[in-house]
Length: 179
Image (cartoon, rainbow, N blue to C red; front, side, top):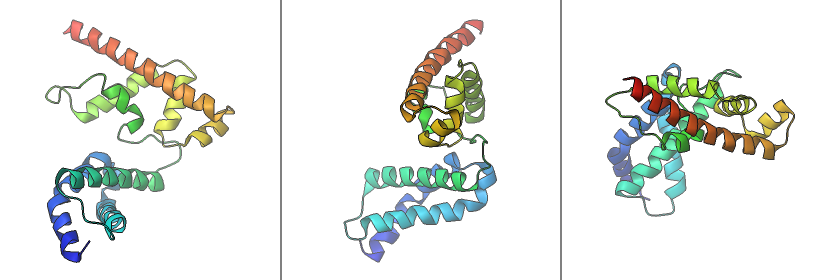
């Protein structure tokens, strides 16, 4: 990749990268926006310096994912032990895809609060394991903390996601009936 190609890629994708950062970086970490942006483009350069640059949609998708991951890294590096992230983790992506929140009816902050309330309805030990994971703990750390095997942690996370999806869909249908 030449310098001109890199500059062109940055110009073409800066809106996408900044949107990813705005969506995934907690407000208290906004002072790190410049660092996250630089890390995102540095990773792009290092990955493609010996290859042709990505173009179009591929460029935007690749950089969006890298920017999201850099936001997570910044949060992980600066979080307080045991606190929950401001954004719902991708561990819940499978759950959220089962119910599509109408953007006109519910804002992201309201959705995140609602999802957290649903998590609190999970039975133990699924709730505890899910909360540890959402707090950014790795599977091996959760296993040590709870005194169980990594396989059990993975199983609890998977079953917890399934229960959460059912619970969320049930509660959403009840909310719609109340309207």
